[in-house]
Length: 117
Image (cartoon, rainbow, N blue to C red):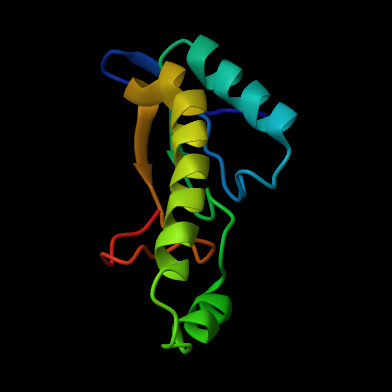
């Protein structure tokens, strides 16, 4: 993990982006190492470059949404995925003030209330 370093009025900024974390399927050890690297970097910042979560790609989500005769599977899947989001949020907590932003990607989950992961 090599940071992108540039000079700002307050000093050098070390920007350490991450993409395609694919939580919870991705390499948890690598993700934890990245979090430590960002946390320990002097003036370290990051941006999540898409596909932070790994749930349902676009075609999969469209396919299962096509089945209209089920009343509770959506809610069950929502709860399952919210658990994964909470786990990742806990892991990212040490760098919460260093995350400049996030790009959505296409491995998200859309909840019944139309919000997403």
